[in-house]
Amino acid sequence: MQPTQAAQNLAENSPFNFACHDALPCFTQCCKDVNIYLTPYDTLRLRQALRIGSSEFLAKHTRSFLSRVSNIPVVQLLMDPRTLCCPFVAEQGCQVYVNRPWACRMFPLDLSSTDAQFRLIAGKERCRGLCERSRGTVGDWLERQGVLEYAEMDREFQSVVPERFKPGAPMNEGLGRVLFLAYDLDRFAELLKDRRFLMFHEVDEETVSLVREDMKELLRLAFRYIRAQMDELYQIV
Ligand code: SF4
Ligand code: SF4
View 1 (cartoon, helix red, strand yellow):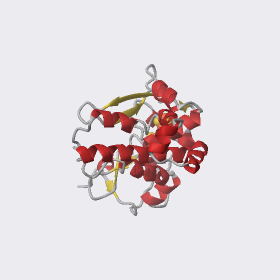
View 2 (cartoon, rainbow, N blue to C red; view 1 turned 135 degrees about the vertical axis):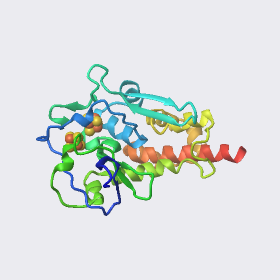
View 3 (cartoon, rainbow, N blue to C red; view 1 turned 90 degrees about the vertical axis):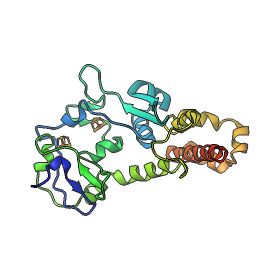
View 4 (cartoon, rainbow, N blue to C red; view 1 turned 90 degrees about the horizontal axis):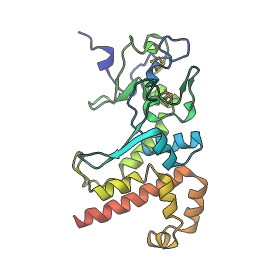
């Protein structure tokens, strides 16, 4: 028996017949009543698109908390409570398309926990773009979606957690809060105004100028700071 579409595992070089466009009856339906967990880079891109600060973005558009079991930060995009739609969807489509989150770029795919790298998370009956004809592989499609840059930034974020930290193990609550700085970059930028902080963490003037101009570099500096805090604690415990 063939596996159902939604359970199908795919590798990067698997053929992928898919095309999403506004003539499909399902257009924008996938932007409704959906759980979207944001990465720090998603948060950065969205707040830049909306031209608001990170704290305002987090307060207005997300539900964020430290996971009760692991103390790892969880940041979830809030749907409109009346319509259950994403706040950024309009009749014409996504209003933040260029800066849409990683999960939206991936849909109808997600990462797979099996040897295959990806899996379909929607079937043809829900996601009509899977019935469209198109040529290419999963890898080609992900490249066109701009997933690679998001995946690279997420790899950098994942590497702030020391190898000694076992996935699923509870994290020190204070470190969970430090980890949250990667989402709330305005708060991290505030720390950089303190000369003693810069000296203590050996952040030179050149880096300070760079991160003032480039928010992606600011995020990378936050990752370095968080990793240093993690290393310090894990040397003690
Ligand atoms: S359900 Fe699939 S085809 Fe339809 S709009 Fe969403 S991604 Fe595109
Ligand atoms: S961010 Fe854009 S693509 Fe993602 S759910 Fe919202 S409207 Fe849809």
